[in-house]
Image (cartoon, rainbow, N blue to C red; front, top):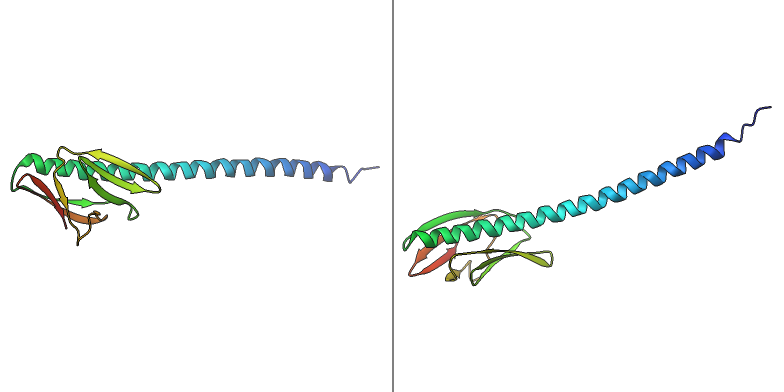
Length: 134
């Protein structure tokens, strides 16, 4: 006599084990993807801060009358500002900074001191001040 019902419980146990392994793999992948996205956003903010700080320092070092245009590329959710000798890029309850060679800057974008993303920015050095405008 053949036992027909024996393979069914074994099949269910093997299927349950494979399902547990599959769920574990997806959980690990989801966590890794989230960490990768956070790292990408941090690096993008760091790049934006360094690029703007370097451009401001460059204009200041060129002397009076120097004008330089830079495209401020990055995540549109970034809030960019300048305080003292630092460029701040704020995002997701944290920020990245980059140092500049001057603390004499004037930022004015239609009455706002926030520097917009994904637009050209005019940097003009005059009377010892780097003017950051559109």
